[in-house]
Length: 98
Image: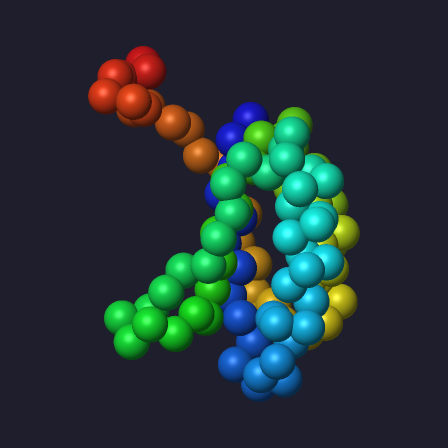
């Protein structure tokens, strides 16, 4: 099943957390490329990064949460709030999928 994972950053977190843990985070994404199909930051209108998004293909919401908790960013306090929602893709590459 496809899920989106929407991360909201903790605005009171240390400002250099993202940079300090980025290499470990990217390695984690690479190690889980069979489940995490896309990942990246979401920029605000002013260009600041305050959130991020993953597209994951896992069996359940619990499996998506397991990935979130295994991410090296998780224990740092960078994340303030996480939303996980099942996503139903209905259109891709110019074609309807339903």
